[in-house]
Image (tube, rainbow, N blue to C red; front, side, top):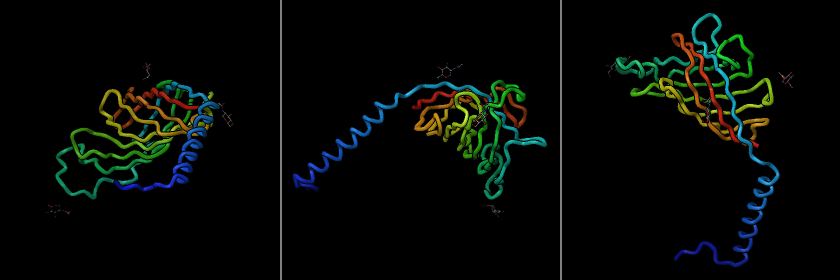
Length: 186
Ligand SMILES: *[C@@H]1O[C@H](CO)[C@@H](O)[C@H](O)[C@H]1NC(C)=O
Ligand SMILES: *[C@@H]1O[C@H](CO)[C@@H](O)[C@H](O)[C@H]1NC(C)=O
Ligand SMILES: *[C@@H]1O[C@H](CO)[C@@H](O)[C@H](O)[C@H]1NC(C)=O
C-alpha cells in the first residue's frame, strides 16, 4: 500500500493545522449568527422604446443554421442591463435598488432560457448600500424560475440563498418581474 506520509512529525503538524482551521471556523460561527431574510421587489426590464434599461450588445448573426426554431434564432444574444427595482409593480413606486449586469440567451432549442449574471444593489431601507450576486439559469417562459444567490456585499457578506422570479406582466419584450428572495447572511 502506498503511504504518502509515514513521519509522525508530519502527522502531528497536519493534525495541528486541521485543529487550527476547525477552531477558526468555530470562532467565526460563534461570533456571527446567520440570519434568514426575505426580500420582495419588482424588476423592470425595458428592452423596447426610447428609454431602454436592457441593451442588446451582441447580435446572434454569426451562427449559420436553419432559423426555423425561434428559440435557436436568438441563441448567442447578450444584453447588458441596468433595471430599476421597485417596491410595487408600478414603475413610479419607490425605487429600492437596481439590477445591473449581463444576461445571455443560452438555449439552442427545447426551452427558451437565459444565463443571468447580475448584481442587485439596494438603495433604501435596512439593505441600503448592500448587494447580492445572482448567477443562474432562467427559463423565462416558466411561471416561477429559481436562481441561486452566490454571495453579496454589506449586510449580505457571505450570503447564499435563492431568488424565485415570476413574470408579473409583459408587453412584447418588456417585462415586470416579481422577485421573492430568500437569503441567509450574517
Ligand atoms: C451556411 O451553411 C450552409 C450549409 O452548411 C452553406 O452552404 C452556406 O454557404 C453557409 N452560409 C454562410 C453565410 O456561411
Ligand atoms: C442610503 O445610503 C446613502 C449613503 O449612505 C445615503 O446617502 C442615502 O440617503 C440612503 N438612502 C436611504 C433611502 O436611506
Ligand atoms: C416567498 O418565498 C418563500 C420561500 O420560498 C416562501 O415561503 C413564501 O411563501 C414566498 N412568498 C410569497 C408571497 O409567495
